[in-house]
Structures are given as C-alpha cells and as structure tokens.
Length: 140
Image (cartoon, rainbow, N blue to C red; front, top):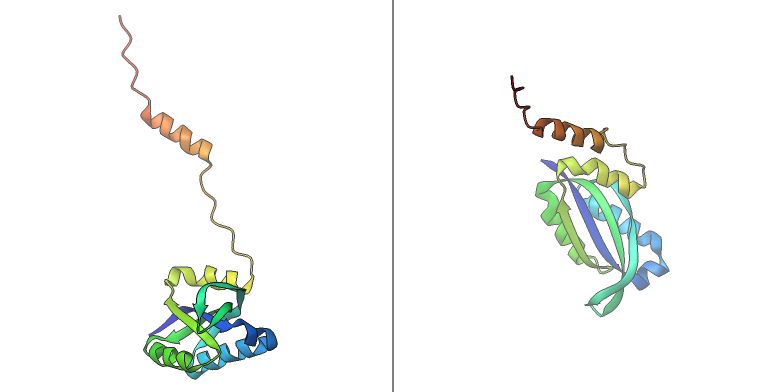
C-alpha cells in the first residue's frame, strides 16, 4: 500500500553551501531508487544544530513529501544511511487527511478557505434562548 511520507534530511551545511543542487539531486535519487513519487521537495532551513553530529555543528534541513510503498521504507532508510552527505534523516507517515494541506504549504501554495462557520454572536444567542427559564403562569 502506498502512503505519503514526510521526509526530513539534514545535510552537511558546508557541502550544501558548495553545491546546493547536489542536495536536491540526492533526495530525488534516494526517493527514485524506491520508486517514490515526489510531491514536494525544498530546503527547509539552514541553522546551527543543538549538538554536533559527526563533528558538524551546522546543518541544512531538507524537507520532502513523497508517495512511497510502505514495504520500501526499509530500503530507503538503508540507502539514506549509506549517503555520506546526509547526517540524519527521519521518515514520518502522514495521516491521509493532512496530505493535501501539508504538501500545499511545502509547495508555497495558498490554502483553500475553510468552510464558513456560525458567527459567534449567533451561537451565543442560540445558547441563551435554549437556557431561558419557562415563564410562570399568570396569576388570576
């Protein structure tokens, strides 16, 4: 069964600075090697890491969303471990309800407007009417 995965890669920042296109190519090759369909792929940020990884203090974080056969994640994990320019990686299976908005944000697309909700004033009035005490019968 194919699922959509959020893939985060941390590249050696020095290597990324020398050749930014190499990171994108590496991600495309890794995901292509497991017949993954890339939905979005971009540099997330470049910053100092909380602790050194393999002697590196700074990393280039690359975010990708891909549709991958679940049985091929183990192969993707192993291929990523063997890539020297990738310091760390993480693959998270997305809930199907989150796929469209997450991919749209990663692509920089505008999200669809949410459905209209009841105005807060109308909701308050409805609650007030439902809570009103019944009127006492008029005395004769």
